[in-house]
Image 1 (cartoon, rainbow, N blue to C red):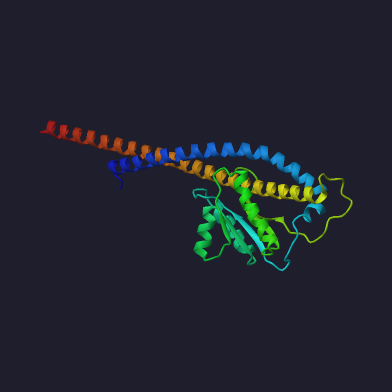
Image 2 (cartoon, helix red, strand yellow; image 1 turned 90 degrees about the vertical axis):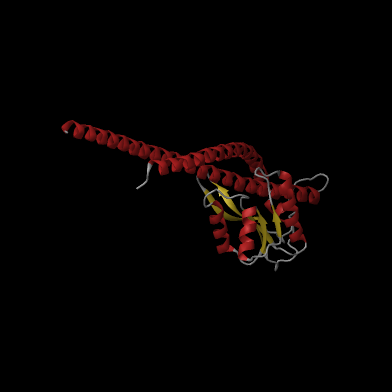
Length: 274
């Protein structure tokens, strides 16, 4: 049976854990709020680019031609850099292990690096983004995947990432970024300045890079949301356990005081009888 002293030691430990989880919850809240604002604004910008893409899909699909159709697909796997976010990374990597068709793999995130190294899976390149990814960082990644397609090392590019639904729900998905279509654009396009080829190529690159950045932001937002959820749960659990220990400790103290009073009363009664 636990003594008051042992309960007191446990309570001190739990209180330290409560302070730590509260600090981590606060940090996760700040990061999530900041990135949520960035994502909300960028989503509007990305949607406009997607509307443009849908209007001239055949033109843009021909801007990045497939040099080698027999080449494998390139998978961009995007995880978080840190743990403490529940099953966020595990679900994504398990999902990828089921769909990988032995294509080229680009690892994005420290957790993805750890997973592939542990499994002995070779990756062609590794990228690490900040907690709040920048457009420039994604630009380096986009430039690299474009070079793989241009050199005939990859026939298409797919992103594997946790699609953000809401703060509680992120769904692992595999979506095509671009397929390097061999089809040539038609002649029905409107007038372009300085010329059609230059405008289409530059715009296509902006569109694909924009889509890639949006997906990287989604992955980062999902990671912060999962971390915040996990820290909230840990903090609430620590508070509940702390309250339970305090109640148990108070009961122990009350029982001990009652026992002491009864013992003193018993001794006093015995002396009176004598």
